[in-house]
Image 1 (cartoon, rainbow, N blue to C red):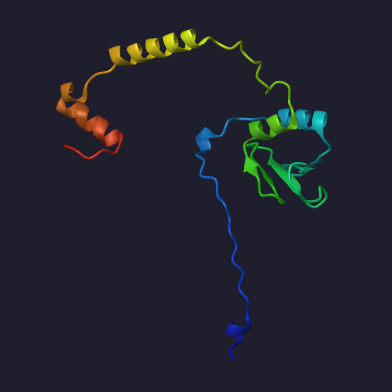
Image 2 (cartoon, rainbow, N blue to C red):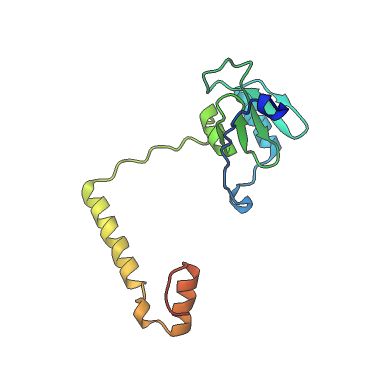
Length: 149
């Protein structure tokens, strides 16, 4: 029996977030620290803030949430929950994140709003068949549609 056969292999699954750097909102470490100070105890590392995870089912001492100081992205070591700072901030119950409920609109107001929006779209839309060939090719290329090029 070769030594390769005696090894047992484990399969690891890793979920990746496919987020463009430009789409991550800027957040300051000072604002993260202020929010954490108001809601929970935490440790401050060189690159991240570390707090126990009260969201997952594992023991809080085992499951830890790591919050990147630069981007605000977070990850729990227990439940593997990841996301942006605004998501965690909302889960911590920051009052600034909670939106005030707007008064409900009547059905007639909603229908009128939809009708107006559709009319605006129709009046500001140009038919593709009326575009010049160069403009049409540009649109087709932008949306990766098949057609003349």
